[in-house]
Length: 501
Ligand SMILES: Cc1ncc(COP(=O)(O)O)c(C=O)c1O
Image 1 (tube, helix red, strand yellow):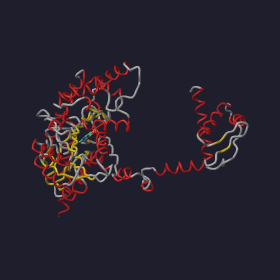
Image 2: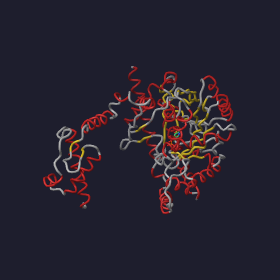
Image 3: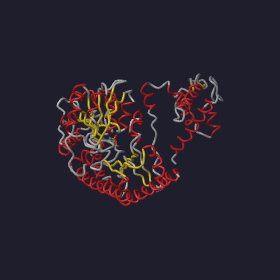
Image 4: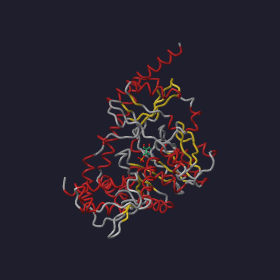
């Protein structure tokens, strides 16, 4: 430990001691403090250290010092601290209620979502979770090389950039989207965001008024729904069938300013929205003068065919906001996503992004630009697509071999998850199935939470369904997991029949 460090350690201890004594009333308001010389002697500290602590206490408003007189405890210093402590205690997540009244309307909407952290995967548990990617799939060497190159070419002026993001990345992304997605846009229309979630948040803030209607798919991506609910939007739920959003329902849902859809790969049921329905959706939007968010979250994982054209490419009025992410190909921890904005929305969204967080982190954007430019991103995507396809095949095969007609697999044409419907298990027994699986060391995730709560009763006639992700697992583990899942089903069946007798 250097002298400097020791000094800062000692002065912090002394500072905290004074704060504590002022808080508990040992030093009351107006009480004189010992002179720096006396205290330094008493504690065996240098006078400079004590003076520094007094200066800090004065700067923070706990004491008042006047030249030539003893420093005194400031009036009101203790109350401030009591209040401070009480406030800290009240914000503990265990007791949110007393605070609720002092939250803004938006704060209360968010509190009402009752979000919770998912339980982490237990040791040795086979977890068919959807969302995380495997760290071993990440192109670490390529990324480190790109980051090193970026950091060694730091620009001379470290200034804020365009709120829409770094120009190198937007140019590279424009080329990539044109080539990979057949999507035509100008770099002006491109905005880099901190993951799709920020795109959804900005849409909710800029396009929906409190109480306004937002059309969503049911079942659907609940994190999108929550982004809208956070601002007091009213969700208008449209059903999803084997061909995606049931667009015939749009007309009777009521007025809406916004629709959120996953047309390339409906989340979670996995269907592709056919062209006729796309046109119906666009016609509806024209009639309502509504915006449409096209969430293109995993189009890289079309296995049998190339990804179809985007909804954005059919849009002649400029009402589609195309959203994409690097959370499914690189890492959800990167928080890199993008929006293709209709021309009319470019300025409002750029301004909103600026007042929110200025812009996305430059170094990460520039490293990503390099990966896109030198072809290593495309190579990585081809590689990871093969890996994910092999995992998906292993899962679908294993489900077929171990469970046969017991399960119906939906949505296996693309993506990083499938839905497994357990034909003979009613929806009400979904949690019993999950519990039985847990006893076999397998973690599976129900589809129920992806339905809007208001429609739970309507969907209770369906079978139990699981959203099964496989991106974290290798093929042998997938096989093992499904074998255990079939055992769980057997146990569940036995238990049910013993109840009958
Ligand atoms: C439908 C859907 N959209 C978007 C995302 C990605 O979100 P983000 O880009 O905020 O990580 C996911 C991830 O699970 C998703 O399932």
